[in-house]
Length: 128
Image (cartoon, rainbow, N blue to C red):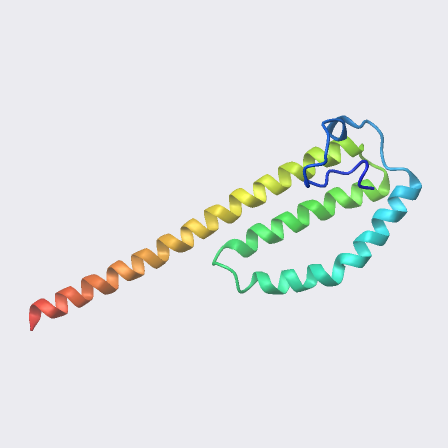
């Protein structure tokens, strides 16, 4: 599997992005077994999403939905490996952008709350 699918660990080659063939039946079976083995871990991560910064959870949910769709098409032999690898890379990049935007928005909200609290303290201090 690692030979054909993009892993993102620095060992990948450009040929993985242009692979014109779908997974073989043996590779599809291996992918299905791997998927089943990581589902419990994924559930833990999904449960933790609710404790992250406000707005990050939708980015995670979108990422998981997109990667599930890509994986399902790979397991069904509907798309070439190179296409799946490119789609996976784009999904990851979109997730990272969404995650950064959500964290930035949450930080902006916190800053606005702090500024409002500081303004209120100053106004109350000037009244005394």
